[in-house]
Length: 208
Length: 249
Image (tube, rainbow over all chains, first blue to last red; front, top):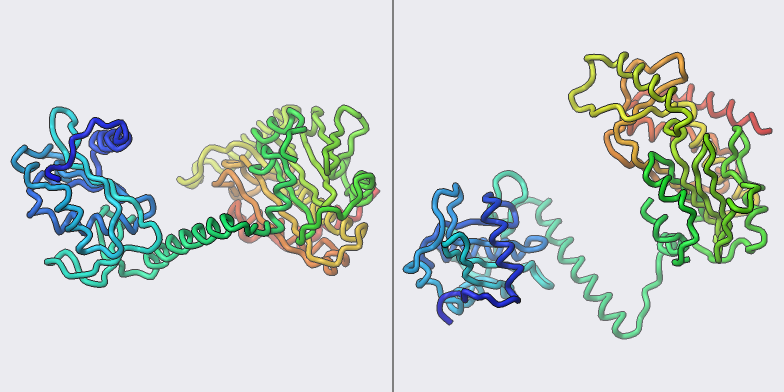
């Protein structure tokens, strides 16, 4: 499928609104990254790294192509837009991602300009690991995350703090999946003493 | 349980600076106290060291709440605003407005705030926000002591041999400072920077049966620390609480 769809489909209304909000806000965050409107071949490794990083970040993130970080350049030209192919993009991301990334890609028109938006969902069960080298950007075996300290950027995990946070996120998901499976099979979790006591209180009393 | 029998006063309490107290055996057992004995157990464990007992059992039928598994009371006088309930699992839950914020004491409150402000003067740390109210340190220690003393008496009355959880919280008290009685103020400013301060203590029933004093002193110091008062004297706090506990009428 060529060029990410410029959809007016209601299903993408939230994503379009999210992009418009991000553009209006104008600053990068751990969950938002801007890339200037350059051709796919120029950006593909950087976009892959950011996609992998956002996959490993709680609540994922949003990538917008067409906005420079300093806000001086806006939109992608039709020539640049023509270099982006939805299937090629997804295949390229997944050629580096293990397991595959969960990403929605659309073209958004805002303020008379076009932007390519990639909404990345956080991983479902296991953190996403980079499975092969890619230029200077990507290293086989690396796990990338969005740094939440200092300037937002996609970095390889190097600290025990970041690794622990990622493991906790993965364990939370594993526990939730286990609980859902157990409950579907008729097992009931035994409430803790604390939960039993709290159940005795009216809801208005539980939160203080 | 889920259906609300709560008096309107609960919402009022929650919107004000208030104490939130939970006292219960660590292990949950639904039917530790027969429903018909709930009030008697509270009476037996009630702490009567001040004019206002903890918890206060109202004689006014309109102020008594008969829940499906608990008995409770609420009060809305010019001096006290509180709600508590005690359930068959031996779980006491209590909400009580911080006394210093009740309108009747508003003049004293204003005077205290002004005194603290004058004392602090330009030495106010840049981090300090506005002074939103004061908390008398003696009344503070007494409130904590009442909680642990109630726990002690509950252990005795129900012959409990397992750990007791005492959870004490102060809510909506951001900007409040510790103060002393009318004529004086503390030299330094000890202020709550967060809206909610709470902690849970798991207390051995055997130790508690001997005395609640040690736990009350420890918990009082824990709170004072959170106001930035790091060097509050154990001896002075202990002396105040010891004297308080001897006042039983």
